[in-house]
Image (cartoon, rainbow, N blue to C red; front, side, top):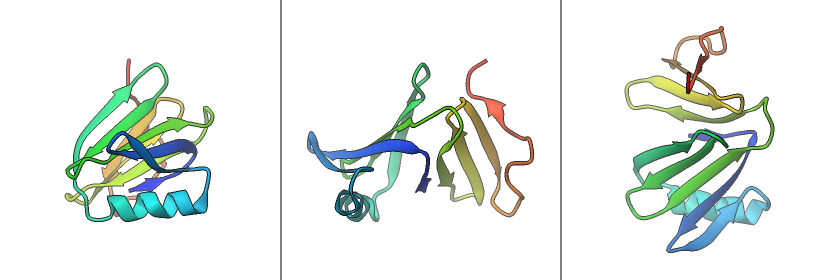
Length: 109
C-alpha cells in the first residue's frame, strides 16, 4: 500500500502511533503496520475518510488534502491495483496495465 496526497494517522490501543506530520511518526506507524493483514475497509462518503483495520488491532485513517490528489494505492494479492482519488473516483486495474488511462469510476453515483 502507498499513501499519497492525504492526511493520515495510525492508531493502536486508542493511541496515535504516528501520522503524516513527522518523519519519526511515519516510521513508527510503518513499523507497527509491517506484517499486519488488512481485515476491513470502510469509507465515509461525505469526506472520503477511509478507515483500514488490521488483524493485530491497528487502524489507519486517511482524508484527502485537496480535491485533486490520489489518496492511496492498494496492491492486491490477485495482481491488481485499487486507487482512490480525492475527487471521489477510483480505479481498479491489473498491476501490469498502464494506470490513469481514463478508467476512473465514481465511488458513489
